[in-house]
Image (cartoon, rainbow, N blue to C red):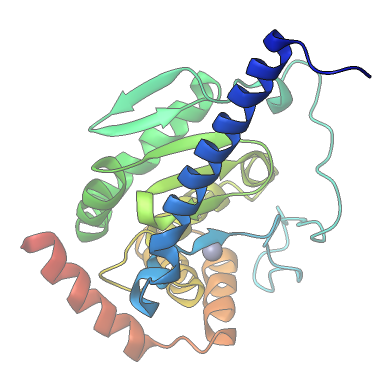
Length: 246
Ligand SMILES: [Zn+2]
């Protein structure tokens, strides 16, 4: 190839300038992370929930209907014709309820989220106030493929297709509420937003909201496995109350 044409050379220069600009921006953004304290990095953590973190044993007290959670690696059962959540929009539309921004999914998704929010407000008011400050006040709730997760620094919650589809199985209706509680607690930074705290929340609030014992006990077992306890929970409840009332 011969020497570059002036046009091409100018283009290359622009490209180079752009590259260095992007690099500077990227490094500049990465800088605060390097010096972040352990408290900050704790807050920067993103919480992912494994698909179908549902119980693997049958409930001992209830024989019918029985939830049939799949193993973590199995794929969701294909939804029946006409009811597929695969076609649900992601990223739009945006709907609102009581300051909560709820993005994507079908109307049915939005309605179910609202039903649970109303229940939280009535049955677990402190927890709802926390969610109003930490999620409605900063982030949003959105529908997505895959599992549910929480990005606590921004108060963003994903309620995933896997948990939604799972709760549609017979006897598993409460799972969606438990999922919301779990992901909400991941945003409760004044309280305990770690996996132990989030799982205990599913147990504690799940019991108050009369969710199936099968699920609330399962959530408790997950929390205990992570070294969580009632003492820790009571302590974080005090901090949560102080936070919502200040
Ligand atoms: Zn979690």
